[in-house]
Structures are given as C-alpha cells and as structure tokens.
Length: 473
Ligand code: ADP
Ligand code: ASP
Ligand code: MG
Image (cartoon, rainbow, N blue to C red):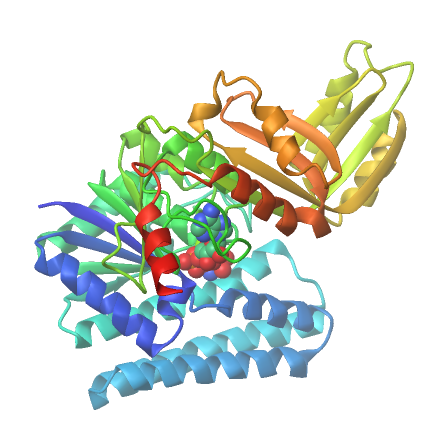
C-alpha cells in the first residue's frame, strides 16, 4: 500500500471549515487505498501570536501576554466545540485544551517575573500551537470516520539543542518513526503529528525554525521512505512568483529539487528551505497542493526537471536584508583576509546570503538582525565598515539558464528603471540574483514576470489557468 505523508499548513487548518476540508482530503486518500501520515501546523497566525505573548511577558507586560493567551484559548476551544459534536469527546478535549493553556499561562507568568526570554523558553511557548492544533485535528478526523491517532511529534523528531533552529538527528528519527508509526499504520490507523516541534535527547522541547512544519513532513517522509510527500497550502502549487506580489503568477507544473531548494532558500515562502533534502536523499517525489482547490494537480518536485523552453521557472524575493560593505584598500588580497571576515560572521552565528568582492571591497548580504552592530564593530577592527538595511534580494531560478548567453542583459533590461546594488550568478548556475532597495522589490518582480513569462512553455506552466481567467474577465 502506498505511504503518503500529508502536511497541512496554518491556512489549511485555520478554522473549523478549513479543518473539515483537510479531513475530506485525508479521507479521500484513505478511500483511494493510501496509507497517510498527517503532519499539521498550528492554526494560522497562532505562532506569531504566541511569539507576541512571549515578547510581552519578557518585557514585564503580564496582563498583555495573558490576554493574548486567553484569546488563543477561546479560539481553540471554539474550534474544538464546533468540530466535535460527541458530548463526551468534546468535554474531554476542552478539558485537555484548558490544561495546556493553564500550563502556558504559568510559563508566561514566570517569564513576566524573570524578564528573560531565552531561545529555549521561546520554543516551549510556541510549541503549544502545534501541540494543540494536532490534538484537535486528530479528534476532528476521528469524528469524520478517519481512524486517526494523535502522536506527539516530540517523541519522534529528536534534534540537537540549537533552540529555534534545531538540527534533526536523522538516524534516530528514522528508527523512532518506524517503531512508533508503522505499527499504527499496520492497524489501519492514520497518525496525526504536529509539525515544527521536536525535542533534544534530554526531552526538552525544540523547534525547527519558522515554517518548519514542511521540514517535519519531509523528515517523516524520508524516515518512512514514503512514496510521496504532499505539502498542502493555500495556493495552487509553486508559482512563477509569489501570487500576492504578482497576481499574474502561473502554476509551475513540475520543477526540479534543485530549483525548488534554491527558490525556498531565496524567499519563496511556499516551502521551508530544508524541506527538500530528506526527500532528495531518498528520491521521494514532493507535491505542493492547494487545500482550497484539491482537484488541482499542484506542483511536482522531482529529481530531474524536463526540458523547458522558458529560461526561468520562478522569481523569488527575500526582503528584510542588510548589505555590509567592508572596504580595506591595503589588505583585501592578503592571505587569510576573507577568512578573517567570515570568521566574524561565524562567531556571531550569522549566515551570509550573497558575497561579492572587488579590488578593494567585500560586500555581503545577511538577514537584518540585531547582531549587526556587534558584527560591524568586530569587522571595523579589520577594515572600514558600512551597513544598510531595507534591502531585498531578487532571485530568478531555472535549470535552463545554464549556458544561455545574454540572459543577464535581458534581465537588467527588464528592470532598467530600478537601481541594482549587487549581482551574483550562483555557483549552481541555476540562479541569477541581485540586490535592490526593498521598496523597489514588488515592482521589480512584476516587471521581470511580465518580461519572462509572456509566452510560457505549456508543458511546464499552467497556461490553461491564465487563458481561463482571461475568458472570465
Ligand atoms: P502554509 O501556512 O501552508 O505553510 P505559507 O504561508 O508558509 O503557507 O506559504 C504559502 C504562501 O507562500 C502563499 O500564500 C504565497 O503567498 C507564498 N509564496 C511566496 N512565493 C511563492 C511562490 N513562488 N509560489 C507559491 N507561493 C508563494
Ligand atoms: N507554525 C510554525 C510557523 O508559523 C511552523 C509552520 O507553520 O510551518 O512558523
Ligand atoms: Mg509554511
């Protein structure tokens, strides 16, 4: 029987109606003879609100933090009441939800007293989102005739202790997933787990980083050698650009692992950047699908993409970046100089996105973060340093740009009205990236999209949807 890991994002479980749609999709897979394992996110916006509560408590705003928690308690209670009609199951679930929120409130009160929010406490606080959503969803599935069983993901997703961006321990996860999930599936049950959360070997709660439920889906899929990993979201698949920025965006029917990874890393929020690796290792196809439009074919991510006559597959944008210019006229080419610069970023655990060097300077881009003043202070011991925020990186991805002449000229002609700060063509040869002012980013994406997706290859892009929309309007 084919094993499929189905991950549903926050918008796919945002309210009772969304959870009912999700249940119907899972029931459909079961009816089709598949063996699903379900991974769910917290209900939409819950993680943001839990982080706000944690932030308020750490500033001593106990009342504000508890008010946020109280609103979340009502939202989860209401959702459970709405979905679970059986009086006994509903009462048991509400009691359980109340216990979890009582625990959360204890943590928030403690935090408001000690006023120090560590990454470890932050992970504990945000973990409630997925812990509670997954329990409610499992109960809702049961009520809709799916033999669902809730499994605490923290008992399977064992990670190191880097709170907020914990690294999963693949071999342990593989062992635990097989030991704990396979027997359930053998009995015809559907395991339901919260994404994003894990625990270190001492049993302390960790998280995999924002958007990490996709990663959980892929980890479980990899561990169980699933036949497919489905990432269910609120758009029709991976699109030629973020449809919120570019309403003309088209669905990409098929894309390679390498292209998808590049897009995810450079800001296409539709997939967590680490998602692809566990699937690549075992050559498991990944599908991105729309829970609001389940009949749509979505995007299939495969090891090799078929040839495409359009040079690019998609345009990603990463905002909230800073550029750091390090200028040292005497030292730049001296031995060990670049290493010294990178050692500083390493010391501050700050990943660098893009680097460009000239005769006298090195420019680097990083996510804007509060470590920048300290990084600049360390760098200024080596050279003159300037840094500036509010930058955006545009990344155009496509396997078919390999070896094409004149592509850069066409790209920059399309955005000749926009000032470009830094350019790089990745070593992977499948992306072309450049940095601009954040305020210009949306306009740049729309101009590039208009230039490069005018006559898209119908074997790769869903041009039918564009034609249908044109007929409707
Ligand atoms: P989920 O809650 O399902 O994890 P996310 O909000 O994390 O969903 O990701 C889905 C969103 O990603 C979409 O609503 C869309 O606005 C955004 N997005 C950004 N770039 C792309 C892209 N290239 N293709 C599709 N969606 C994209
Ligand atoms: N709930 C987490 C977040 O919002 C993880 C996820 O949804 O993927 O970042
Ligand atoms: Mg997501």
